[in-house]
Length: 313
Image (cartoon, rainbow, N blue to C red; front, top):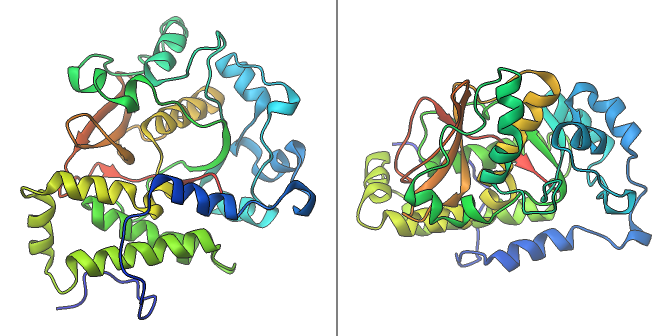
């Protein structure tokens, strides 16, 4: 039987361990040079010229969400011209995410719903969220307190190819391959992504090497499924390339409000957060009834459940 993973970065001597959130943040910080050492970043006009309609900047944030940013509060665009051109080829859009509503309150998922539902109703756009109820949601930080980060992101307008009908581990492999072979095609893989992919390979070798797909599915769906859900969600490659639920909803709304076109209308994207019941949260099927928010155990899969690649670095 062929190996379950297709990525072969070579023999790895580093002993597996899950990176702590602060260590993932450290990888990101190491990629950021001091302002004086940084090459001149793209201006808003330059980025918009490259991306066209696939650009959602400060003016769009003000128009569609009612949030006005001071010039000094607008983050520097962290992507190069080459990265933006490649992202556009891959069907991604450049989006400026914000973390506060016009009234200064945290821009949580319920706040987005509250803020925009009247407009949706007045303009016959349907609902923002399918439901804001449910004890599991109201007990989950991803829903009640988490907001998007104030940052630029490159976000997919469709699922990463071949990411549907995959369990969470398989999706993570797809993301690792996609980053290495498509996102940075023809470019040097940044150290943070190289380290994250290596960490994932170590994790797979430590837990699943030489096991069949059936054996792996049984582990991911068995009595230790919550452990695997936490470990997988915390892996660096997932933290770097999957959206949070708040990110996902924000991006869907931003795209729809600016272009009138819905993304993830019939499929959902599996995020990097867990709900209060341990499930890994997905967001999507953003039809007239509103975006659906729910969760699956890591061993689950569905033909309507993919993953959107999203990165801020």
